[in-house]
Length: 263
Image 1 (cartoon, rainbow, N blue to C red):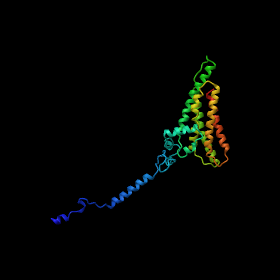
Image 2: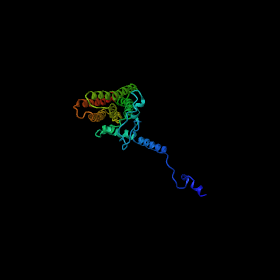
Image 3: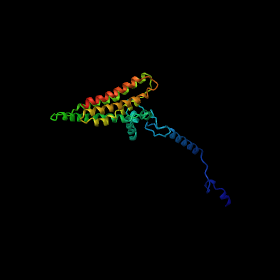
Image 4: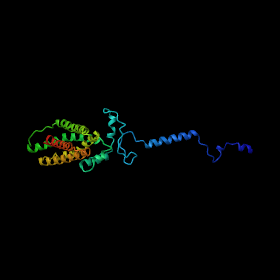
C-alpha cells in the first residue's frame, strides 16, 4: 500500500503547481509584445486625438491619404467634435486669440464647408428680404418678385472665394519660400467667413446707414482675423504685401456682399 501512494504523480496532489510548458512561456511573451505594440502605436484613422494621449492629440496621421479624388482621404478633416468647432467659431469672431495654434495639428474642413453653405443660403434669402423691405419702404405700391439668381451668385462668389483664394496664397507662400499648409489655409479662410452669418441678419434692417456700419465692422473684423493668422506663416520674412493683399481681398468681399445682395 505504501508503494501505491508513493507512485502517484505529484502534479495531482493538493497544493502542487504544474510546471509551465515552454510553449506557454513563448506565447505569453508574444502576447505581451503585441499588447505593448497596440498601446504604443498611434491610431491610423486620422481622427482627432485628445490632449494627453501618447501622441499629444495635436497631429493628424497622413497614412490614410488615398489620393485627391478619394473621399476617404478627406474623412479625417471632417472627424471633429462639435465643441471644437464652436470654440473655433468663437475664436474667429475674437481674432486676438491664437486661431493658428488651435488648428495647427488638427485642421478641419467641416466648419468651413458648413459656414460657406449656410452663408450661401442666408445671402440668397435675406438679400431678397432686405431688397423687398427697402423697396416697399420707398415705393409701397411697387410689384416685387423673388430674385432666384441670388442663389447662383452667392454660391459662385462664396464657394469660389473660399476655395480659390487659399489656393492662390498657398502657391504664393511656397514660391517665396514659406512653409504653408493648404488644408490649414482652407480652414482659416473658411472660419473667417463666419462673422458674415450674424451680420446678414442685421443687414436686413431697411436703414442704409445701419447696413453700412454693420458691413464695415464685419469686414474689418474678418480682414483683421485673416491678416493675423496669415502673419504666422510669414514670420521672419518681409512679406507685408501678401498680408495687406489678403486683408484688402477680405474687405472687398464684405463690400461685395453689401452692394450686391443688400441694395
